[in-house]
Length: 151
Image (tube, rainbow, N blue to C red; front, top):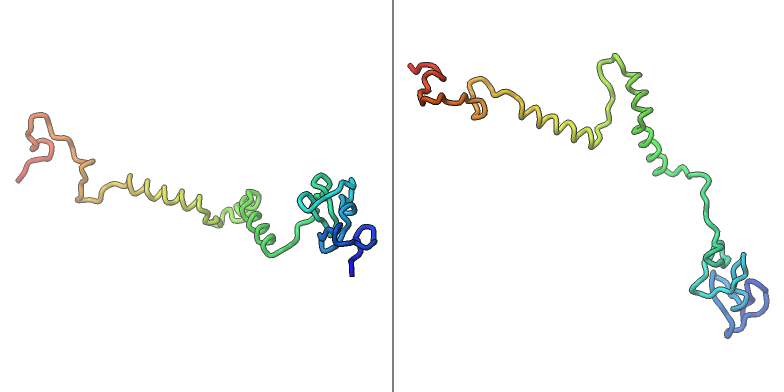
């Protein structure tokens, strides 16, 4: 038994049958819902089980973001990182002797750089001298005047 056309409702015979969007169509009935341009299997776009040409394919415009767990997590994370939030936390904790600071990769990089700088510029421990802190020898070659008398 031959199926009926999804557009006109008449019987679709095998020679003119287009099977698309879970329906059967006459070749002439398979056209754009908006402009009535005849479509084929290569140039149609389906939306809600109806054929459209590329120019009239409905654009999905989302008006509201769903509150999925991932979206809620991203919203919370962006609020934590916002400058307004930081300022509020700073003002709230001002005078308490500490402030809450997120351990971001940028802050970790700055801390590491500061640690490296402080290690480089730290004075040598007492009793140890490094070549950078040795006095230069006098031109005469007598080192007793620069380092003191040897016993």
